Image (tube, rainbow, N blue to C red; front, side, top):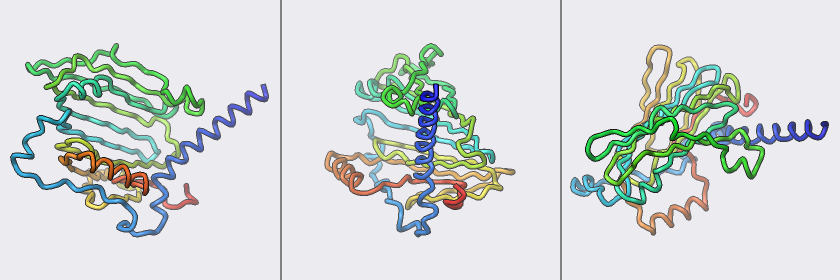
Length: 274
């Protein structure tokens, strides 16, 4: 019995250590005291294109017509993250890649709501995935490492998806128990592979909270105030087609240097506070 108790304590310590590393990734740069321009690796800018080039994406496997990710945090550390996406599927390879969607979450502190997964058919009809199409499964990593037993995945089977049709989904993740009560943080990278016509990010926080916000070059937010809330918003697109040489060069850069997220935010003001 004593051995079991000690084993559970050790697993708890390892789980806390894993969550703490997530905090470090977001927080470390904020207390370094180094100017923003010296830290982030700028993401590639959207290239200029001619009107004829910009309109023809028919040979791409899929086109992300729109995607919006919205974070909302409360002062107690709880919050939500919602992802709403619309993707035009244009090949059999895309059907295979998007035929089953996976959303991961930590069951001990989060819950996931699949608001909808639906397919807009070529004839204008709409097919929505039923509740039976959603499975809640233990993540593969948990079978290999018991430290991650709380990490689960929702697998959603997309109904009747075919080339030439549009996939739409809305996933809402709720932070029901904060890792650090009274604090919140996030990091985000904009999509930089494939064709993305419109991508939006929104960060909604209490106006009274002081946060440290860091962004990569070219990703300054728009700030607005609505009542007791402050809202940061970003809007971008990406229409560059990477050839094999581009992909190899990007992979080489990623191996040789640390790539920082485009947006980082935390309420921690010092290492001591964390």
